[in-house]
Length: 536
Ligand code: GLC
Picture 1 (cartoon, protein in one colour):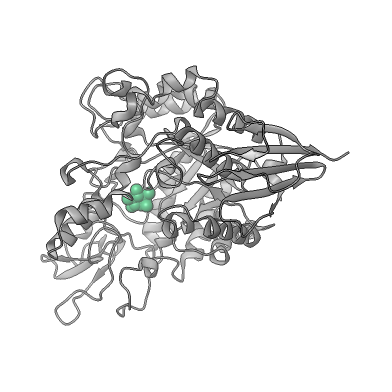
Picture 2: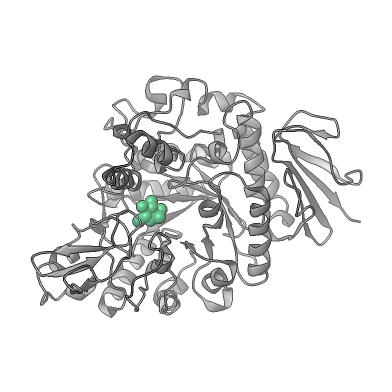
């Protein structure tokens, strides 16, 4: 496939509010990100993805935007952002921003105007509906609430929200609205940013048929509706095609077949995507399903579009806790998971803290959690009469707060994250597990990430090479090849807590990276090896 800078890039995701606080308010800030750019550079990443820092009442940690053109106080100022962007570029790092245009905050001027009444000139910027037989139009749920419809007494209509009540959905059928969004995108691109991560971008088009669904908990009816590809092609034509930028769409509820429609290079929509087959279908590790998903996406996108590889982010529990072993095998399993995301076909994404093997958290009380998705669900289930503790326990493993605790920089007060009181408690394991300690050790998770990234950078086969799963039905070992012309890589991963003999011949290969100090042919728990052969 065509070579481009972003296909070769490694993205580092910065959840800035939990990254580094420079003004003592307990929230990370843009100035903190700027100060840590050399750290990201040293790791070897190429692109920094910043979660939303626009003006926001912060009901959903910045994903409820009240002004697309401003910076929220907690994050800093526009001047801070410009300085951060400039310094990132000077270091050779690209910067992509979160584009959240499925919904705004209910405090956005557009919504305040739209809400004034049926005659408001902005009424149609949002989705309003009359009651049906005195009730909400249907039984659809939203991600964060039991109904996607919210009653507005003043105008006697319901408005539609795929997420919280405070996040009304925009009406993409309205041309004026679409052009307002394109203008805003140009504003940021003209400032010099290098692209966008597009929040739930396949939710923009809404289902026309408003009848009840059989299973309202399966939210797939919110996504991939007719009209979505026309919007994305228009966006490409109006904006994206005129810039040398990258786009990654957050695209839940897609199979490879549908996913290809978003990223097929001929179709001029998005560059790459995050699909959620792993995150949504695998609460814990499931080797056979994982392999199947990888094979299907590889086949589905081959020669057409580009995949992305991630196992965690600000919405999903830290990978070492969810898919590895965050106790006695923490270091080995953190490295094994890294090996996966950096050697499977697609762009690798690192979520801050992953590079030192940070772990999830379990708080004892619902009061300690902040995640609106978890808190709303907790209240809903307890309201039904369920036992409080049972509900809490059922929500803990996948709570989004697992990955939102502050970055652990050192063993000082609040892990060196803030001089104040952190907005969210620091994980207690910071004394042992922190950046400073990790960087001092040659065999640390951080050092392993560095080597892995360098290996990928200096070997095109790991980016553009063909992929072949050599053991599709083995439940413990994942063994695959990446090959391009004369270069061939063999990746052998023991994703299990037992030891296993190496299942394929390796004699003609050189061992180029390994996560454990083991010279035998018996793979240890969570052992990962990368072999290389150059065919003469
Ligand atoms: C995306 C974001 C998530 C947010 C939601 C609503 O899934 O990643 O954090 O809550 O969209 O914007």
